[in-house]
Length: 302
Image (cartoon, rainbow, N blue to C red; front, side, top):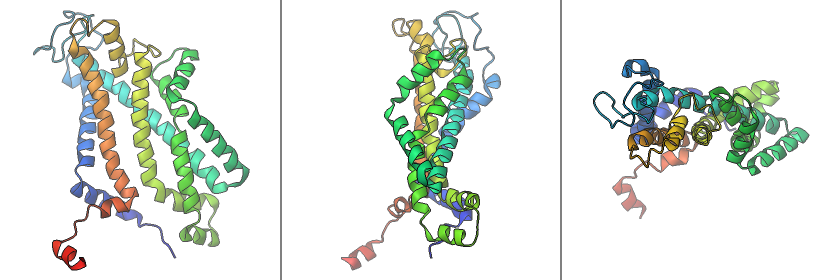
């Protein structure tokens, strides 16, 4: 009889993976730098991100580490405070999309019948619809768009890929011996679903959260850059929007464009590096490929 993996060994798996593969650790460090910078923004800069009292388009200097905008705003202050909103929107939207993927992917697949058929059809329809055009249409008809509204729109439209993957895994796990044994033991459906199936899909759920967060940060920046958000709220996306509107490239103000664009790229990179570790937890064969075979064994086998 197949038994589920021991749940207390997850942390040991993670520590072993980080010792063998440094990519997840590098990703965690990069992400922590941005998170800590956003949290401690008031202590890292003395300026307000909306203050316009400085010299316009001043190059980076000791007083303004990343220069100023065409309106005389400090780019370093905008960079730190903008990270608060961009990261919050990304993680909030990623959490919403992942929660919906878990509910709409696992529950219908476990219950089966017409519920699963209808939900699978609806999921396939959502996958066919292009994501960014759908976001543009929805935000165009929503009044008073802000970070919370954009996060909700991104989260409510970004669950389909995760739901499809979790549905397939639920259908596979539902046929395993330990799940069948739990049913025969008289466990309720909710107990089997939450206590037996979900823990064995935790790595897939985390992987979905990682990719959903990356997609949400990129989508938020795209919507803000297109002017579909609130331009008065400082985010990395609105920094790019105002840099484009202020003709930063024509004025040679590279310091206005590079920081937010590079931050978005590095956060996406950090989450992708973290996902390498998540993949190794969910796929043991990736860990086995890392194990080196001694030369003596290779010679004996040949």
